[in-house]
Image (tube, rainbow, N blue to C red):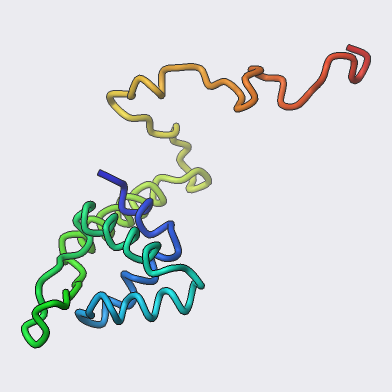
Length: 138
């Protein structure tokens, strides 16, 4: 499951959530609004809607007036998860440096295997960050 911040980090998904925050809308309306604002295809909008469905951010139901149309609505559970994540940041903010009492950064109780591994540079040369042999008298 994606972190609530990862979901809203994508501008298209964040805008979809904002549009749905005022009420339920059909997929056609969402496609028209988002495709126009972001100059993306309807299939790209559908891709983001699928991610939002899979992550439990939105629910989909058939439109009572038009059986072939689907209505999207934001799930309150997602908004509660997002609110809890923001609350966690405020909790850390209260413990920040410079408050008169120095506290060490908090680390997870059970680090994931990826956290235990030393990180290599994306170019594959650990610690070299673009340096080439011979530069700076090496």
